[in-house]
Image 1: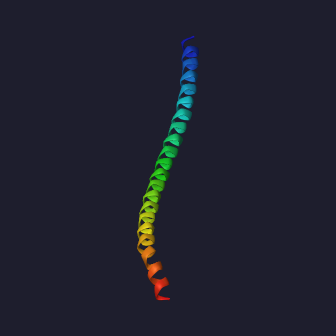
Image 2: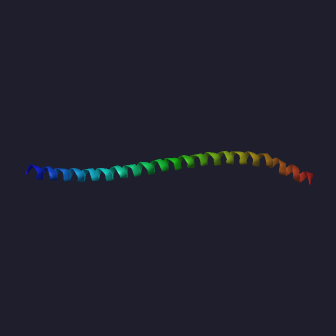
Image 3: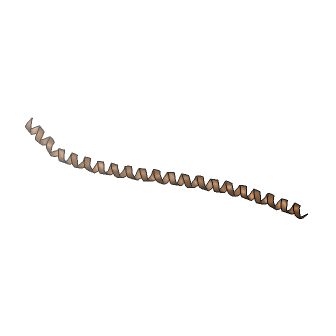
Length: 76
């Protein structure tokens, strides 16, 4: 009877180990996805910064060229 009880307990243990492995695999997949999303977020933040700098430069250029239009019109 002791061996039968041991066999049952070993089956339960193996079942729980399989469940644990499934959960650990799922956790790893979620961690990988989290890291990927953080990398994507960083990439998007970098793109926002680049676009903001380009916009500032474009506004400065447009401001600088505003007076040139009048000068060119008078010169023509």
